[in-house]
Image (cartoon, rainbow, N blue to C red; front, side, top):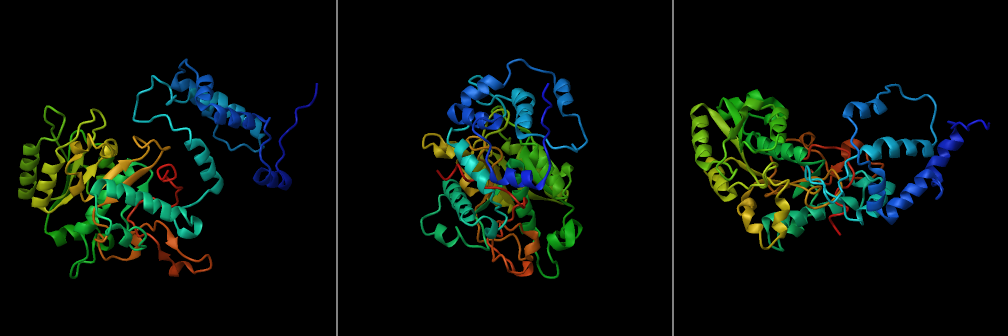
Length: 403
């Protein structure tokens, strides 16, 4: 019996995995070719039809010690194919309907391969170059879809480093958090002796505003990410006020008005009203125009969570369903839902990019692309996009949207 060859960890092999591609007849090479030739067939053949209990699957992933010895890529590929791919969700199956995740267009596969090979980091321009302006272009396109500004508007903002039309995020959750973060910082901006909530915190901000708390109002069909957002922002989950819906699963406007009036008598200031453009469970759309009217009366932020229904704006026939979205201060859209790009690609768009949330110093911002030289000291870096987004290092989510 021939002794099984063992994988070796040494400098030669380390150099090899960065410089020598897998052979076409290797396990990984064959899988790569099969996916390139017929991804639907590959998934159909390798994702099993029979369900295994989750507890049984967990046994394949129970080891907690980092292996001391290396493994051949071919062996690990077999493990991935048998234990991971086989027990994945077949999102490309004709009968699959669930959680808004779909099959991907074929061209996404080679595009993703290019992206993986380039391994760009859009946290700053020096690690992404052309990808940063491409991302800003896509945000401008989506901004124009929502807000329909004229030709003269976009050239002055699209690539201006101190401002942003929006931000790419990992998904709708971070997009919603970012939108409400901007709303909070705008409401609690520096004024007089008050240095702003980013510097002095919520307690001092409430004293400055002369109120007992801040509230965010949304229908009971609102996404659970809004609870996370209000928690992260330090406002307290009890201050996410959920309003009952009407017979069409839309927010009850009369109850919304009554609730806003009650909160004001209690010394609670509405920070934002959130309209839903496509509820997760039912797909219904709130009366966005009416919500915009109320938000204007109360002088509070109007955010639209259009993570699911936003792409309806592409339809000349049905875009009227979202009438009023163009009046929102901010809008969330998930590209990995009805724009058919890979997970996860969320966006938040801002109505007024030239109206920063406060004049606080740069640390409250996340710099989406820095125009720098590789030899420039960090303290002298000039942000290319002070865009008020939460994530730091990230890959491009715009690659398939600019086609």
